[in-house]
Structures are given as C-alpha cells and as structure tokens.
Image (cartoon, rainbow, N blue to C red):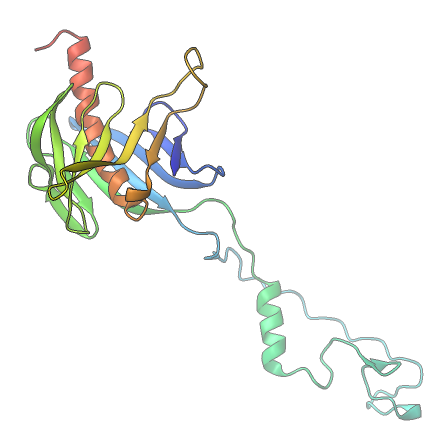
Length: 247
C-alpha cells in the first residue's frame, strides 16, 4: 500500500492512495513556540451529508383522461389514474402516504460529495518539554509512548507498543525513516513501513514522496501515520540542526 503525499513535507500534506483517493490530511501550525500537527482522516462518501431540507413543490393535479370523471368514475371500466390499464405514478390508489413521503424526502435531499474530514489525532511538538500526542481517545506524553533504542543517523530510534501488543521500532535513517517489527523468538526483522522522498527521475523512476506500508502494517495504518508524524518532526529538527552546524 502506498500513501502518496501532495508535497515533499510529511507534516504539511494530503495523503492519497494508488487510485488517487484522499485518505488523510496533515496540517501543522505554530503558536507560542509550539508546533501542532493535526491529522485528519477522510469521511467515506457513503455517509451522505444533507445540505438542503427543501421539499419540491406540490405536484399539479394531472389532467383528466378522456372518459374520466372528476369523481374518479370512468367509462369502459378503467380506474382513475390509469391509461390503457397501466398505472400512472402519482397520488392515486396503490401509493401509500409513507411512499409519498419517502419520495418527497429523496427529492428534497442534496448530497455533498466533496471530501470531508474527521479528526484522527493531534500532536503538540514541544521544543524542550515532552511532546504530547492525542490519539485513540487518550492523551499521552511522547516520552511515555516511545522508548529510545539504539542509534539512527539523526539520533535515537523510537520504539512503541501497538494495539496488537507488539513492539515496533522507527529507525531514524538519513533519508528514509523505516518502521520494523522485531521478533525476539525467530530473531528476524520485518519491514512494516518506509518513507520515500520525492524523486525527479535522475536515478530511477520519478515519483512523488510516499509512505509505503507493507502487508505487515496494513491493519494499523492510522497508528503508523500518527507515529510517523511524531518521529518525522524529531528527524527533520535534527536534520535542520545538523545542516546549520549546530551540535
């Protein structure tokens, strides 16, 4: 699974799948020295939003067919509201009040098919104190959520325990942060997710930046994205400091 970014910056991007469908949006703003990333997930289009409660005007009375009377009687044995023995849709016999109300409601409802988003998570990236992550109905400090382990190109790698009870490790590589699952029993590592920077095609095929999620992580995409935003802010801050010559 690939989540393609609308920009090179993961903290300021819309994420779409291979079919171009928008799945997530990440917006990061700064206030009082704290950067805050808001991560939203798209609301499925099969959940309609009514944007108008207008009802259609009442239908005009249908003209009488030759041979009909105003009281509903008719020559030749035809019933009112029928032509040639075929029923005409309308307010005649066979149409219950419930069916008519349903038709009116359907006609008066408009559905907005534009992308709508629901809040998934929020991360406050604090420069000195521990950052704060709000996700899954909980608020937790990142120093409690992540455990430092080993060393990457831009500092200590980060380990967290996912909802499945297993520990996953984000490797702070130079260009491509990578999420792995280590199995202590078999002593094997499984790649769960990996970030790819944008390529202009000088070497290899040109492509936008994307977050690649392997089969081992396809049932925890929300968790992968939220934790990726956390560690990517740490990694880019370290990268920026290194470029500026700071220790």
